[in-house]
Image (cartoon, rainbow, N blue to C red):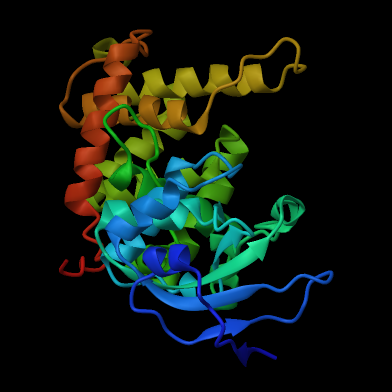
Amino acid sequence: MITAHKKWNSAQKQSYVLELGDEFILPEINGRIITGVHSKIYPSLAERLLKTSVGNRVTKSKGRWRLIHDMERDEYKAHLFDPIRFNTKDQLMDGHHRLIAITESGVPQIMQCLYGYTKDDMLSFDQNKGRTVADTLKINGKANPIKRASVIAWIYTTIHSDSIGRQVSKPGSKDAMRISDYFSDDLWQAQIHWYDNNVKSTFGLPSGPIIALRLLYDIVNPEMSEDFWDGVFLGKDNTYLDENKGDARNALHTKLVKMHRELRKPNALRKEWTPAEVMRWVHYAWMRYEAGQPLQQMTSRKTAYDKAWVNLTLLAKKHFVIDFGQKVSR
């Protein structure tokens, strides 16, 4: 049971903590006393605390960006159960990401600060895995949570990645549900059924990027999207394709068939492709098809696919009109 602690005289702690609340002590841990205080940490204070850090893990940009996103929209709630931890010398041991997020978002946060940990205690910090997007979807009663989570991740990536395709953050639970609810459950089921009965059996492509692209193209131009995907799946067997003009759908079909053949080889012989590369190929072919430009075969020029990615991110930002929440005023 937490009890009030009235014997806190450390001038150093006083300088670190603003708007002090009730101080308290936790039950003894191996004969040691852990003391704590509820504090409102402003950006300037967070910077000072970070300078006291010893032996903390390397910060990960994706996790930091998600924290910043949540703090800017007043959606960060982890402070209710995830404290900032210091050692017996008042040096920061755990809380890097959160303090950096406070400095970069400019939004102060109420935090629980605990003092008195040792170096050995660090081994037990952050060992439990957080809830995944698929877990959140399942809890909310959504069908096919794993495939839906993969699609959501790629939709979020196209909206939030940088110009060269690096994902700057991952969707948190709230953003994942926003993307999920942007489309009806019936549409989700229809798209996953389409993938299982066409894409998976024909090419073995990953569900996330392909369904994300299908959802986007269906918004941009539903009729053209249907013709595009039909042509890609059927290739030369599609009577609508005019090989003399170099249909982009057939060029993509040929590329994907070759890729699928490679992936069925033994590991030592096959070439691996990333889902992001596949996404670039598909969108490059879509751009040529939409513009009515001939394409005899998929290009080997990386710059062409980089431009396709830039176009894709702009298209996603324009047509996926998803409300990710408003930033709070600073």
